Amino acid sequence: MTLNDGAAHPRGEDGGVASQARTAPDLPDWLAAREPALQRTAHLLTGDVDRAQPLVLETLARLDLTWGRVRRSEDIDAEARRLLVGAFRKASRRDPAADSQVVLVLRHHDQLTDPEIADLLRSSVGAVRAVSAPEPTAVARGFTEATDTADYPTTPLAAVAERAHEIRLARRRTATKVAAAVVAAGAVAAAVVTLGGGHDGDPASLPVAPLPQLRLGAAPEVGYLEGDTFVSSSGDRFTSPTFHRASTVAQYDDGLLVAGPITSRRPFPTISRIIRTSTVHVGCGTPSFVLGAAGADPAYWLSDSCRPADPRRLVYGDTGRLVLGPTRSTTTGVVAFTPIGRVSDGVVAYGASESRTVGNATYVLQAQDGASRLVSHVEVPRGATANGDLISGLAPSLTDSLVVDADTNEIRWRLPDWTLGRFSPSGRYVVGFRSAAGLPHLGAASDSVGIWEADTGHQVLVRDLPGLMLDGLPVWEGDDAVLVVAEDRSGRQAIIRVDLDGTVTRATGVGAGLPDGFRLAATR
Image (cartoon, rainbow, N blue to C red; front, side, top):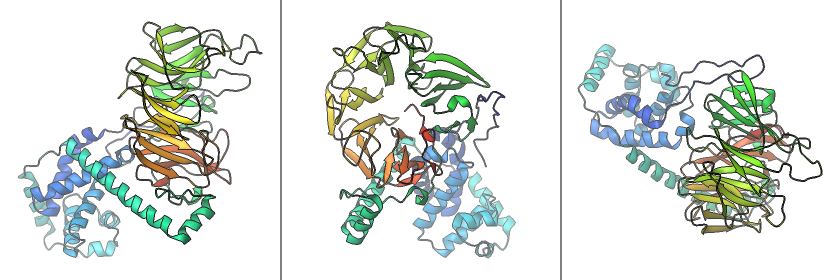
């Protein structure tokens, strides 16, 4: 059964993007519709409604851990069934009698074919066919009568989230133990040094294979660019000259908001909106914008002219406008704003001034009345979260990062030799990156990715990527993984995923490392 069917949306003749109606369900919506079926299968597997509940909880928790990817699959029910059967077989210690019960339930209740059952059990079709009931019709009728008369409970979402958290912590502890064992083995450690060109001995560091050898996992949950093609979060691919080397793309209302590249001729990139089959030129400004919460107006800075008034000036334009949907506010003293994120009372933006006395700084801008306030301590902002009103970025030294309270301007915590980036969607975590040389810029070999708790600065994960260079800021994929464009020493490029437990997989194929190759164009 496929829950998220969607029709194809062709491009127009001019290469624009058609509107997209395909959406994937949220976990609560899927649960409301499909948990009863899961309960029935679990009941028949165990023979008892109460004994089925731990299996259902375990299944839903593991589904929750990977929901960002599973929800885009062709058949969510199949994944849930696979997790349920796996939990049942583990609980029954893979007893042959239990496997026989699985075959009968899947065949006579879930209506799976023998090849489908064999694939789910990782068994042979012959072994599945060997399991048969003397009276199949009676078995099917008995299953129906048992489920029709049973009263099934609804699993609380809080319990699902709590169990998912327990599984995540257990995975992290296991990964740490394995990593420590790997580092302790001299031969393996030497192999890591040979592969990655260096290893700092951190127990959380594990070998990373060259890009073509990395296991290919699920496709990115967020939109990304590949040359002049935009791949949406639902996997639809659209090609248009507008996407060529674009820096940021975000879905907004019934179309896409696109910021083009900065070139020597165009210090302010073109900002366009693609709606169905037409492309509308909005203006020019800075190559980033933020959307904030669902339904919030986009924020982006527009220059007064797409042509510089004086080619000799390093920063062009005398005034600018911060655009929040239909509202505009005039800014003074700062030539250009680069929006980074939203907090409760405005938009966090990096202000670039041509005055050396004023310099560059971080501001919170309020479009409603044109007011702005300076954010202390942060020289270059990298991320902001409305959930907790925190701002991450570089300190004036440009060698340390910090997290600042947006309301009080107090420094929550400081992190030397790392560049902190974006916050996770919930605001619970913040991602950072570091080059092999320990400098806060991208491009050196053997870069690292780290994740910290946003409020406290407690380290959750540090993952070295031997032999890989990061190209662009990491982007969150839910709260459990980050995506980043990585390039190896052979010039090959791919988008890779670093899970919260330290697992590294590829999210795309491997291509040549070109300036207009893979780009993570998400706004978060």
